[in-house]
Amino acid sequence: MNIDIELKKEINNSYQVHIGALEQIDIDSKVAIITNPKVSGLHLQYLLSKLSAKELYIITVEDGENYKTLSTIEKILNNLFEHKLNRSSVLVALGGGVIGDMTGFAASIYQRGIDFIQIPTTLLSQVDASVGGKTGVNNAYGKNLIGAFHQPRTVYIDPHFLSTLASREYAAGIAEIVKMAVCFDKEFFEWLENADLHDSEQIKIAIGKSVKTKAKVVSQDEKEKGLRAALNYGHTFGHVIESETKYTRYLHGESVAIGMMMATELASRLGLMKTDEEMRIKKLLLKYGLPVSYEISDVDAFYQAFFLDKKSLDANIMFIIPEHIGNVQLRDDIDKDIVIDVLNTYAGKMSV
Image 1: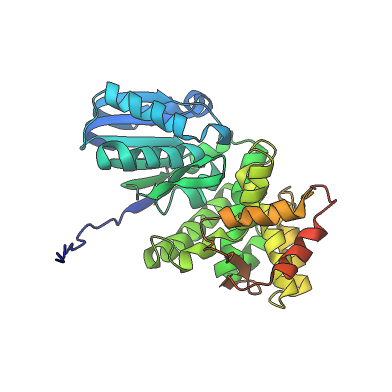
Image 2: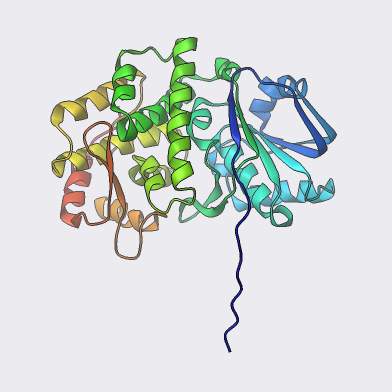
């Protein structure tokens, strides 16, 4: 006997991204703000001056990528249960990508799913992590291997938060901006080459262009079945670097910057990138003090770690390869020897 269960998807997951000074947010239900001690000390009072709710709770978790774990998610969930949040309640992520990813994941599984709002406070989370609904945590096998696609209700991007960022954090966000331009927009890349992203007006333009680019990609491929994977340029290599260094040596954007150069070198070996284009990407990253090299101690172990990447399938590793500046390819047919040859060039090199 066969019984068909027909489900019609009628849920509209569309939402708005507001770029500019934080506006008044009124929520007629219980709200829990998820943040960390550093962000709380800098920005919580500013948010509280703009937010009203039926009941409001603050949940503070430890700061850092190494706390992006299931144990932290359990801590968040226990707080939600203790405060008796229900299905109409809303979580608010106040922080960078780590806070946003964990808040979104907690929202996706609490009572089988509740709403959450993204209020990103780092440049990296403003231009990338807060948009698109990717949520999750890390484990011993790699980065973001446990998670869910769960779109936020709204995203509020206020450049005011960037004034307190450390220079490394700011540069880490710029790496994601460069990523968008290399993969999807040659004119944007050329604009970046001449821009000063420390200028308050120019960084607003860059944020807007980056969010528009990501929004266009996500709208075509919400669950990363194809095109959206291209947003991971630099990440396949970068995630291995983060795992090898136990998330303590590099910020995420710094690892992505190194990964972009590795992927670009691979593109050069495949004849998809000219030497001058490779140098232009490197020059732009170095302009903001980003690392572009890394010492691989065990090439084979580095290669094997690729198979834990979420984009890979069975024996095939999916690489995101720039095709000159402004285009990108998703390739799962690259010969192992070519990849190993690229990795060997990074064996014995120290990061810049």
